[in-house]
Length: 222
Ligand code: C5P
Picture: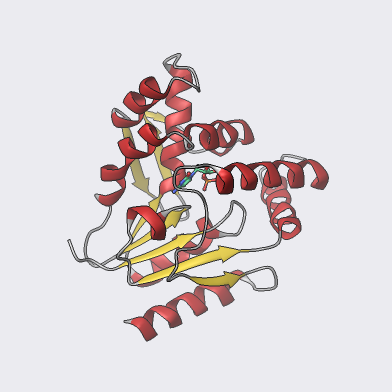
C-alpha cells in the first residue's frame, strides 16, 4: 500500500516508544512497536525450549509467533499465545535475549512481512532500529532519535522506579552501552541513521517538545 510511514529509529531508551505512541495518537495513525516482536520471539523461544543460538529454530518461532496487540487507553496490551506478556517482555533479561535473536538474519527475515502488514491507511508510525533502513525504505519521513547514554540510563532508572524497581545508574549505563554496541556492530540491519534520516537529539528536550517537532516535520513533508 502507499499509506505514509513515519519511521522512528534509534538506540534503546531514547524515548522512541513513548514518542511513537503519542505521535500515532495525535495523528490517528497505526503504531508498530517492532522491538516488541523481537522481545516476543525471545520470550516464545524460551517457552518452547529453543536455544538463543539456534537460528533456524528461532526463525520458525518468529514466523509462527501467535501475538495479539490490544490497543488500550495508555498502553497496548500484548498477548502471546493468549497470555498477557505486556510486562514480561519489558524485563532487562528479555531485552538482552531480544538483541541476541535480532542479530540473526533468518529471524529478521521471518518478521519482515509481519511488520509491513502494519502499514495501513491513514498511516503508520514505525518504531525500531531498521524502520528507515530496511523495513520501510520508502517512508516519507525518517527520524533518528537519540540521547546521550547517560541521559538514557537516567530515563530508564526513572521508568523502573515508577514500576517499583530499584536499579543503579552505573549498571543501567553499562547495560545500555552493551546493547548499543551489539545493535550497532551486528552485520545484519545494524542500528544507524538512514541516509535520508533527520537526527533528533532529545537529551535536552521534553516529550511534548519532541512530539511537536515530529508533527511539524511531518506537516512540512506532507
Ligand atoms: O526497542 P526495544 O528495546 O524493545 O528492542 C529490543 C531489541 O530488539 C533491541 O535491542 C534490538 O536488538 C532489537 N530490535 C531490532 N530491530 C528493530 C527493533 C528492535 O533489532 N526494528
